[in-house]
Length: 277
Image 1: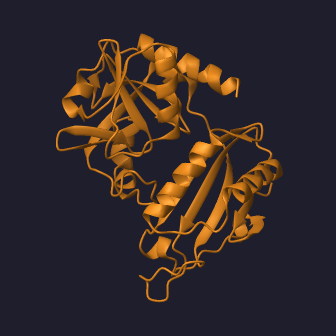
Image 2: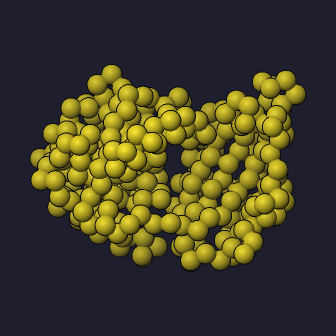
């Protein structure tokens, strides 16, 4: 079955995409991207994802070659052509081909949209909780979704060896974010999550609203690394994960070592929200 995508102004198929070895995304890692979910052909949190993609592009002075209206039309068209029940929409933009390997030329960007079949996490993870591990690191331009994932990729073998679902980045005694997720801790009934020096995920932001609507007290503040070890509960949020309970950090048990009660409520409320969209 062909996988249809959009590449530099044209609808094409995945195997026909050709990226130059002189593309700034290849040579220098100069690019941004976004990952969005869709169910039954309908993008989830479309406006929030577009806004974040624009903000990320602005950080690198990249000029998106299409507007929001055209982007939505293309996304909906590609979802229909690929007709997966649940999809991942991956949008990528780089600085494009550069004559000297450094100079970015506006209107020569590489821009593409790929539709992939969504692969959910095993149900066992949501039932029993996941393990995570920490790595000393702070992402460059953390508030933008840039294509530099060097540290995450470098540590994949260690992550797998430790049976960890995610890597939590910590720096100077502060826990920041996960390699492809945001994280929350629960302490004495309060839901706490970092706000500075991180990427503000769309699922993170929605989870905050759901928690507040459920009547929980929420704090967006600096989280010390030691706080995650002493938390009563912990969970991750991400577009491709929804809300995932965490029961171990660096091999140490979180709370009772089981999925927390508040986390269970938020997982349920989040699921209801998605179904009713």
